[in-house]
Amino acid sequence: MALSFRRYCRLTFLYLSMLITLEHLGRKYRANLNKGIDLSSVLGDAKKELRAWHVPSVLKEPVKGDGWVGSVKDGSPVNFYDIRFNPHGNGTHTESYGHISPERESVNQQFKEFHTLAYLAEVVPEDKNGDQVITLGSLRGHIKKWNFESLILKTGNYPEGHDFSNTNPPYLEPELITFVKEMGVRHLLLDLPSVDRESDGGKVQAHKLFWNFPAQPREGCTITEMIRVPAGTAEGLYLLNLQVAPFHNDASPSRPLIFHLEELS
Image (cartoon, rainbow, N blue to C red):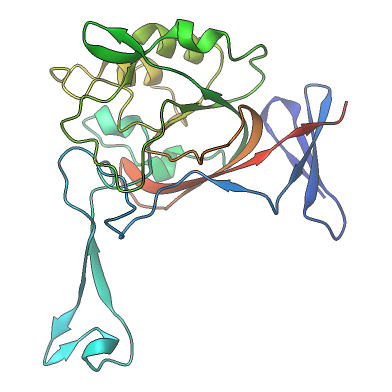
């Protein structure tokens, strides 16, 4: 069977195989669906989950009532737990322009492109006025063809369980945001807690530039933060399957999966 992509992509499943071939802008690629790379961080394990913005670790506790505790250890036949977390501060998450809008537009309503072509680039932050900044210059040399809709940025090697709070992490300069937007990037993924500076006086300039907010918001465009790119993951073109939990909220936990593309012609 064949699935249509934006920009005239065609995805063809090979019979009784987990290999797929992809035709995009006149070029053919192959991907192995058995060799996906998970870019998400674990939620609910304090030793592994990424955190930011001074939020506590994910809270999990059994429901209690009428002498009953929803835990097998406490005699219940099943585990029945409440979970409390903040999607912006706990783990990998995807957000819509509702993050900076009074209407809090839902990412579940905005996000409609589950499979896109993505380029993974490993960029090195530059020192600027005491900050670590991801500049347009640091990105330019990595990409020769802008034939994709999703851009994945690896900026460092942050360990499992890392807390970005009050560390002034690297952030993206406005010129980079403007450039990638003009090049047609609709989905931006990065291993940082924000595209903006941790303390920027509430400007959120990079967010506003990427979403062209408030003038003419870019419908369907997303930012995914606090991904985790495994060591040894090569730069290059990938098939991205961005899985976003269907929360009716401006942001939601997500699980980006990427599959390396081998060019056939």
